[in-house]
Length: 486
Image (cartoon, rainbow, N blue to C red; front, side):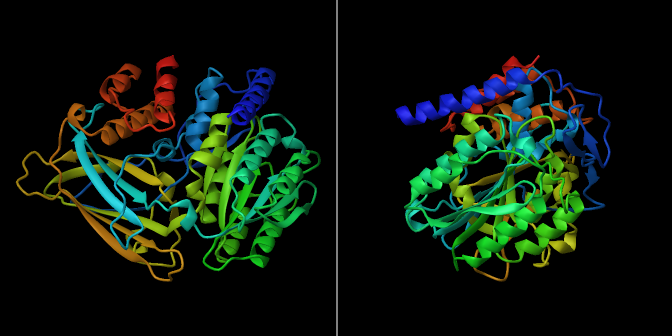
């Protein structure tokens, strides 16, 4: 207990010092919408996406998209808010606000790795509309049943990583992860600055002190040959590949690649080639000032992985301890297809997921890449819908989900009928009310044209008591952020 408290205090103090050093670099310029790359005044790089519009169900009844298991946009927002500033609009990806949190969904049926559920309620910010929530949950896997892991820690040690909120935070996180390794797990460490090198060859999880000693030696300096580091890490992971195991590269960086292949497009091409090896990718973003959020989100998306932003000690514990099951994938190429009943639904709008859209025929095409779901991980999406004025049928939509089990080569289909009778938001489940609350806050941060009558107080009012399922206090922290926001 003392060791964990000491660890948390050290990391919090390091981040406090870094925040004290920051100035007014994180102002909130007036960003306009559009599909382009955007830089804040601190040269942080984001990409804005045009929001999904309302679509008439009788003109296009089918909506298809990939799951998004990232949470980086939310924790990045928290970083700005803790500095007393609103995040840049382009940094807001509402699906990542929602999926930062775990929802209280049922376990999958026997033989399946994912469960499905849905709910319809009134829309708090537009009284003429309703909200349709769809939920998914990856099956929980007991720790003793998780296959052996082959991890490669790929750590950016370039000059831009020298501040206390970057490399030191990563060192703390990887040290915590080392403590959670099992004896049959393996970990290697690759570093990159002007060039890439192997700091620690593949080492048994039983040699925790050796692993942590290597981590403690990390220091920053030089330019950033990120592509070379990625290639080296994947090569090392391939050499030690565990059949039917958990093979993963975990990249920690601020995204400031400036040597060799450095454009987002080139790095995406490289990552797409590497993902065919069956090795997953987790991207951990850190720091302020030159954060390349767009690049990191994209390579995680294309690399069969997920993207998280590490802003404080609590987030380190969330990623490396509380939700470490996410490092084990239970559903590959996870795709969602909602077929609306035009007799029941006049029009619909998917909130968020703008960069996860798929064509209708992509759904059954196993060669089309999509997102992954980790053990115990939940995925949630909201549609804002306009119901038909008169409707006597029972089915509002068909919710189809397609995914590949690890080790399989073909996808499997599971389906769920959306037929629950709409209720008022006040009488909706805790899952629904909290999903609406975090979505509404995202709409406000995005300054969305679809925010309707939303206000800060409205979010606090309709959310009510939605912290009944909050094992680590993340929901309560969210409401504290909302209450303090001016």
